[in-house]
Amino acid sequence: AAKTGAAAKTGGRTKVKRLLIILILASAASAQTPLPSVSAKPGGAAAQLPAALEGVGIDQKLDAQLPLALFFTDEDGRRVQLRDYFGKRPVILTFVYYDCPMLCDMVLNGLVRGMRPINLQPGRDFEIVTVSFDPKETAPLAAAKKRTYLNSYRRAGAENGWHFLTGDEASVRALTRAAGFHYHFDEASGQFAHASGIMVATPEGRLSRYFYGVEFSARDLRFGLIDASAGKIGTVADQVLLFCFHYDPTTAKYGVAILNAMRLAGVATVLALGGFMFLSFKSDRKVRV
Image 1: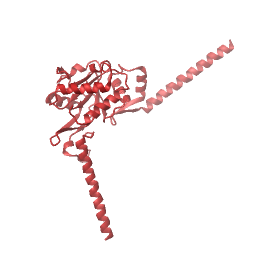
Image 2: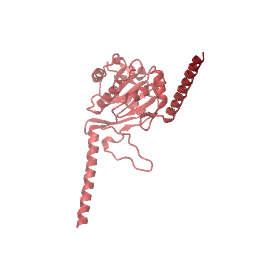
Image 3: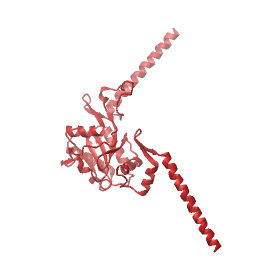
Image 4: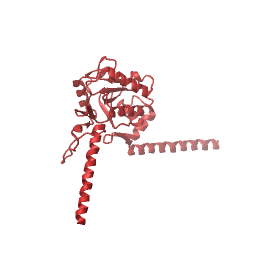
């Protein structure tokens, strides 16, 4: 009887655990929690997720060319081509929809927080292109969102370097597909399920870096922009730091490159010893004179 009771308790706990897992997944779907892309593992089955989250995620397509010939509408209602924002500077690319109840604002808020400490200037050193993936959204909504984030960023001149676009279904699909950004409209909730992250592209429109989540470190953003510009922006100190850090696509972050750091430390040691020996020799000569 005792064994039967214990088994019943164990079975009850198992059912509770399963119920909790289902509730957590349901909450994630309704709250649009950031998710990695869903894919099948070799030799295994695909991850089981609610239907609303199937196919949602971000696939890294490093060095892929963005379709710059696509047409969109900017926040002022003007018809523009994507290539209008490329050619001279690296570009931070963000996919959101302006009527999003939570996650999209979290991404843009995180981007603003990450950019504030950086002394690089939008419109001068880099561009930001924010594209709505909801084809029903229009320029007035994009303009309102731009005002909100310019007021939050509080960087003089940023209005010339941060662009908020809308587009038709074909253009939006072509661009998001090229960037590896996958989303899904949930009929039940009337909202989009999507992952969170941003991309950095080169001036030529090639995808250079991906950063996931809703918080983006100033260091990663700065390094990503400098890398994408091929060193044309930033300082000599930035180039030295980039020698010690490298981008890891598996974590979508910059980490310490141990070997390079050791090499730099070795060079610094040799220079320090050389300087010490030079000063000592110079001092000895003065004493002899």
